[in-house]
Image (cartoon, rainbow, N blue to C red; front, side, top):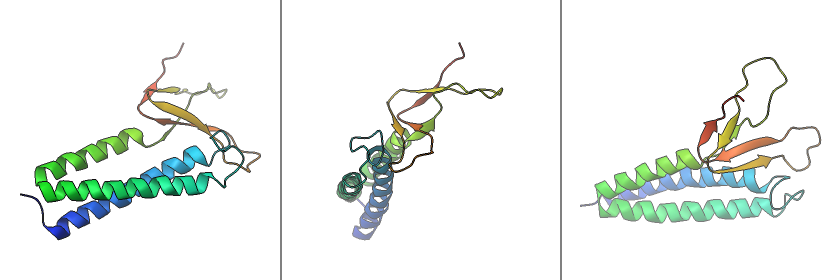
Length: 141
């Protein structure tokens, strides 16, 4: 037996908002980026990121609501899967370069997809590398 209509809709709305925010932030990092597919132009990246976020949010709403209406066990599995996927797929800043400062230097690698981010229109910033996947420390050597 599933949950009530109100509980199913509430769970779906919460999951949908969380997914929309996560996909939107990740899409903005990847698409509104000097090293990204649109280069210097912010124009195409913003609506593309917004569209991806809205589609992901709508899909999440439909899936979570259907799972909640089916049974509480299925809802628990879907929500657990969403949290696990969110943990793995949210971008993390990683250090992939050697430091010239005499202090412990944590370098990291990425088991998934890594990309460099540099905001378009910025002339004096530094490029940041993000990892979508699991970060792994690299041994000195």
